[in-house]
Image (cartoon, rainbow, N blue to C red; front, side, top):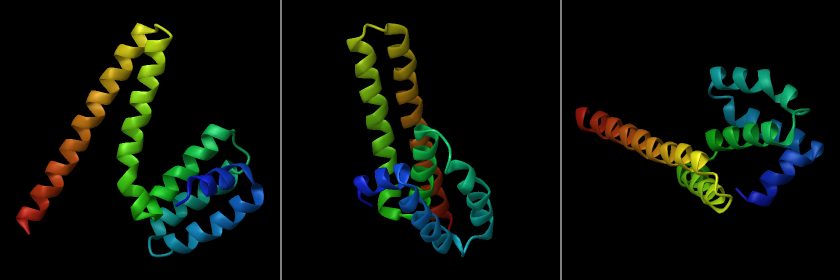
Length: 123
């Protein structure tokens, strides 16, 4: 999905309303996901930018495999970018915390991949 479109969905009520319908259609096969989405969608319409953008990204990742494939790399790159900004500001405690987040994120992703490989081997 186009990042400009994601931004418009987050900042434009008309685009957000159309996006809600698209996501609901995509989630029709999964009632549990659909219920969770519907419970939050209207409330998020009036949320601050970061909360609404996070909501839009989360559900976009859930319904778009190409975005889902990129999400871990985007998350990793965001954390590294954040760490570099802390370095520039000489906020070394924040650099250390962010560095640990990056390391743990990679470790956890690796663990998920190991579990998926194990499941494939068992079949």
